[in-house]
Structure formats: structure tokens, C-alpha cells
Image 1: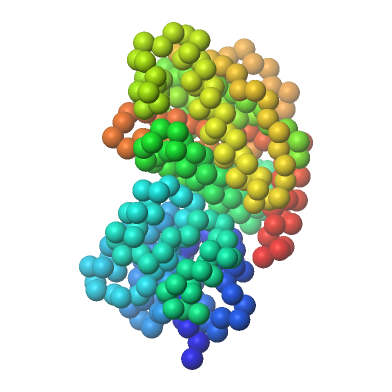
Image 2: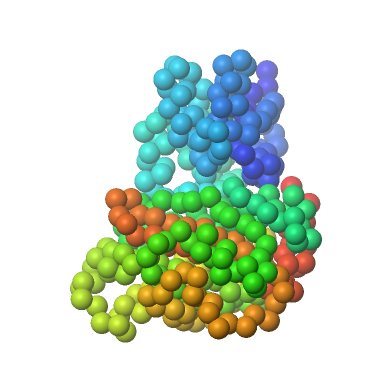
Amino acid sequence: MATKVLIADDSTLSRKMLIKALPESWDINVCEAANGNEALEKCKSESIDLMFLDLSMPVMNGYETLEALREQNIQTPVIIVSADIQTKTAERVKSLGAIGFLKKPVEMSLLLDLLKENGFI
Amino acid sequence: MISRCENLSMTPDHCEALQEITNIGMGRAAFALSRILGTYVKLSMPNIQPVVPDELPGLMTKLIDINSDITAINQAFFGHWHGEAIVAYNEHGCSELAELMGYPQDLNNDSEAELFLDVSNVLVGACLNGIADILSIQLSYSAPAMLAKSIAVKDIFAGTHFQWSQSLLLEVNFGLEGRQFKSHLVIMFAEESLQTLCDDIDQFIAQL
């Protein structure tokens, strides 16, 4: 059964860049969201196996989305993909429950390592 | 993100792509600044909009929301594209930069200028190189120079006669957690580089 992957980013370009970086051999079904609120609704209504989440988004940003997931006890694993590559940012999102942090533009090898570490491939 | 690119020959796709690419460049600049200062740098959303010379002072005043006098550094970039970057600091800029970097508080004018020039050089290089890396192009830079010291934002370009009729302006700003420091980075692309920039974005999008 294909892994259901949600990509939440307000930038169409960023979503395309991330989709291009995903391993070709990985059996996935990708869906997209343009802000945290849309992402949260998808997590509630569908069975999402992994979410890639941007931090800087309108309506509901990535930090707020992580907090909402935690408050609503939604267990979807989240990998943050952000242009804010400061150490404190990575530490903060991990403290909010993210399982990984990738800088934009995503490097395929780092993405692959993270997916392997977390048992997705 | 704010985008008003419709007055230029840029499509919404160009603008959206440039905003995201600028976001990545801004992230690299913030990372570089945070490494220098050892503190977290707060980021803004990038502003991207066309500008004509007559509107530039008013637009700068609007974008650089600093009520006090500012100090501004400029640095030209050239190569595949060309244009000019300006980094503006609020009045707390120097004392807080000096403190965080371990400089004495009573800096003389030369040391103060050197501090601003060094930090501006890092911000401009990191941001523009971030944009250039994504679009696979190379840029070179002039040495940064003091454009204005302790003046109102609206007066930055007083007496300047511009050689261009329109430009594309990118603006990002940086703050420091728990500090009053504020810095704005404004990048203006030369008119003749705009089509090249659009072509570069097209090429990048086509690869996805």
C-alpha cells in the first residue's frame, strides 16, 4: 500500500521542488496543502503517513500547525522543510514534535537519510 | 508575501517563484547573521515590487519602517545580473552589533563604519548568493560603501539622478530576539537585467 505523503507549503514552487526531490522508487501518494489549516484538516480527514511542513505560511504557520497537532493529539509524523535554517529554529520545531528538519532547497541525500532513519523507506 | 509585479513583464509564476527563491536567500542571510552575532535572527516575509525612480523615496520610507534616523550601506552586484543592494540599520544597530560581536561600546567613526560594512557584506552576499545558487548563476560584488549616516529614510537618495526608468525591488528585514536592532536589506535589479531574471526563473521552473 502506498505511503500517503502530505506536503504543506504556500509556495507552489516549493511543493514542486520537494516532490522532485522525493525518491522515485518510493511508493507514495502525494497530496498538498497551501497552509497549516488545510494541512490540519487533511490530517483529520485522511490517513496521512508523513507530512512535510513549511514554517512560514499564511493563515496558520508551521509552528502553529505543530502546536495544533499536539493539542489535538494527531500523531502524524512531521518533517519541517524551511528556509529559516538557524539552529534555534531546528531545535524549536523538534521540541514541538517534528521528527526532522530539512533546509530549503531540499538536498536529496539528506532527505533520503531522514526517510531511512525514520523507517519510511 | 507581498507581490506587485504586474507592472513589469513578469507573470504571476515569475513573481511567486522569485518570492520563494528570495525567501531561501533571506534564510541564508539570517543564518549568516545569526552565526556572526550568536543570537536568533527574526525573519520577515519578502516584499517584491516594481519601482520607478520618482516613487523610490516614498517606497523606501514605507518599506523601511524605522522612525529614527538610519545608517545605510550600498553594494553593487554584477555579472549575470546587475543592480544594487542597500542595507539600512536603525539607530540601535551599531551599539547592539558592537556589543554582540564583543567590540568596545565607544567605537570611533572608522571602526563603526567598518562594522556596518562587514555585516552588510555578509548579509548581501549570503542573500544574493542564495538566490543565484538556486538559479545556477554567478554574481560578483563591489566593495560595500557607506551610502548615508544618521539620516531620515526619505533622504537616502536625495540629489541622486537615476539612470533607469523602472526596477524590481526586493526587501527583507531582520530583527534580533530581545533586542531593538532592526536591519532592512533592499535589492534593486537593474532594468536591463529584468528579462534575464525572468528567463532564469523560466529555466528553473522548466526543470521541475
